[in-house]
Image (tube, rainbow, N blue to C red; front, side, top):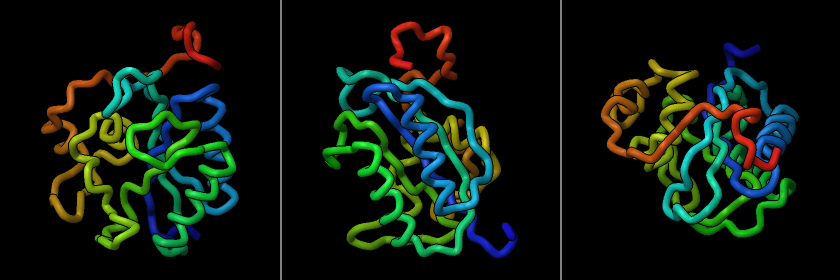
Length: 172
């Protein structure tokens, strides 16, 4: 039952190879470990941090779980490995990237895990898909809704709904 599970929000992203395939495979693998809730549309977004890379496909997803944040973190790392993610460094191209955005209303700040994601409020590519599925969700530290964070966001990198038939250069 969903009522006794913790609502957790993830951001999925891919900018190598068949980007849509990696997002879909990631959801299949996530569904083996979590109950899937809401899913945003897929957005094509400029690469944040290194604009010379291929654009990302990003989407937000809600999952329900009894698992601890550290267990979720390990599961998502295992899925990234299974889907061919090689280097875990910042701003590098990747087949799949899974970020834990929120774990209920909890605030976690350890050496290996920070929830809520510490930079989500600065990144339109996170806020646009998250706003689609959780606009009223309040950030437990900033005490602002996702809609307000999106309205206040100064990131001007393009974030547009992805349409495979209108994106002939996409590897899909």
